[in-house]
Length: 228
Image 1 (cartoon, rainbow, N blue to C red):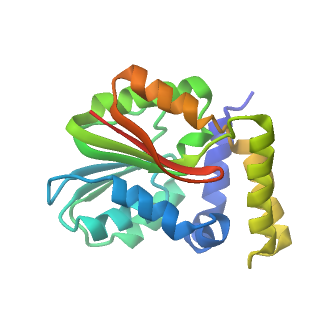
Image 2: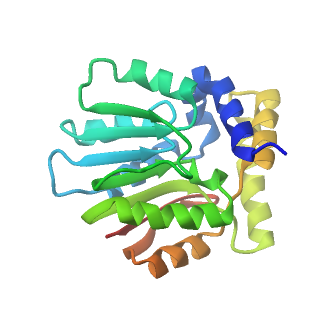
C-alpha cells in the first residue's frame, strides 16, 4: 500500500507552477490568515533564524523576509518542484537555504528563533502531528516561538460540516471556476487529515510549550502558537 505522503508529494508536484496564483482564491481572508501568522511570530532579534516547515513555493518565507530582512531562513518541503519555485523566488538571497525531505522524520536542525508552518501539518496523521510538535519544541531556542497557520476539524461533526460548506461556497463562487473548485475539494477529501484545534492545543501544553493560544480563526482556518 502506498504511503499517503507519496500521493501528497505527487499532488503538490503537479500544481507547483500555479500554487501561489490560486492561494487567494482558495483561502477565505487570505490577508488576515497570513497576516496573523506573521504578526504572531515575533522575535526580539532583528535577524532571527527561521524554519519554514512544509514551505512549498516559499510564500510564507517571503512574508517573513519582508518582516525580518536580515533573517536566516530554512525552507523544508517534500516536493522538489515546489522548492524549485522557491529557489527562483529567492534567487540571490544568501541567507536562504532549501531542504527537500519528508519532515515527518527529517532532522529539523536548530535551535531556531521562529518555527512556522502554513497549510501543511494538517496532512499528517494524528500521531505524526503530535510527534512533530515534540520535535519542533526540541528545535526551538529558548524563548523561540512556533506558529502554525493551518486547517482544523470542527469541534463537533455539525460544526465541521458547516465549516466545509462555507469553504465550498467560497471556492465555487470564486474566479477559479467550478471545475477547478471541485478538484480542490476532492484533493481535500483525499489528502487532508484535519484535527480539532482543542486537541492540538492540548498536545502542545502537555509537551511543554508555554503561552499556547489560538490567535486567529475563520471557520476551518486557524493560526495558533506556543513558545519555548
